[in-house]
Length: 394
Ligand code: PLP
Image (cartoon, rainbow, N blue to C red; front, side, top):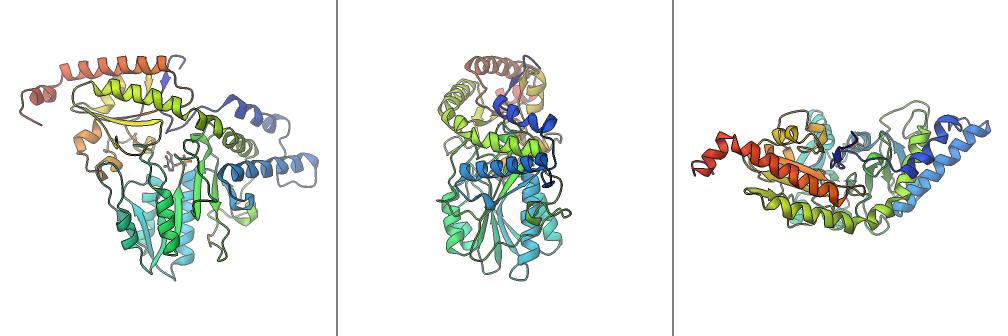
């Protein structure tokens, strides 16, 4: 592990030392149950949770009572999509989303379709962009929710969430934004962007795994969502289960350090530009969503006529991804790239590099050298590359 160059930060991130230090006492000293209000250890745990809730609210510029803790974005997505459908289907059964959403969204919506939901999956162009007129035209009186992520986990493409929120607001439709990849990389002010529902996950922002937060805006007409997990009535009855105190403290602490990440955004961009320019000098290489607004840390590169899996096997010193971490166990091409019109072959030849504040120029230089050598070697022995060189395939 020591020499591994970790460029898979959209899958998960290293916990910050400062975050870890805030968590440790809640495992071994203040290990009380935050619902045990009749003794000091429980009360202290409870106070620490409320502090973390405040830290999340401050980072997003919303109210603490609009924040609910859960196990992460997948749970939030399930809670919101299922909860909204259950409570609003008497008003309408239509949900609008985009073909390039995370599998947590698409799989949950497919389940809801079996129960009678009608889902529109908006098309994207070659860079992952939707047409805002398509969004507007597809919102009908039957539409109960628009679900569009802030930034794509595979390509880093950033949707115009302020415009999307404005359209939904104007059309009086709830807007749910999966901001799992966006938070910590781009500033977000919920006081200025009228997003109704938002989710985030601590492990993408140098916090612990298995903890996240859901923002539910307090509106004159309260948003109705049933809890997915019921039991002891924690989180005001919205999410039952004994509080994971150390993790909640870790989330609060990670989000409070977020400005550190944001300050380093320029540095990360510099590393990415260097990586992209250097790898682009390899023949038959292109970058997905290149000339659009993208997360500063993400680059998704197609090395044509090779298999991404072979490239990664040849570079065991590098931690990379062939797309979304959640699907990389399978050999299916990325649904995101296919939706963008990328061919199956090019999708399977695509590798994602996702950097972080821990990435260094030295690591990027080593990465460039290793990848360039691996691509050259793979192509030397590749009949497909020879056919391409001979002009027999494109
Ligand atoms: N949404 C996006 C955009 C993601 O990138 C991920 C994780 O990769 C998720 C949702 C799921 O997050 P979690 O790991 O917190 O369940």
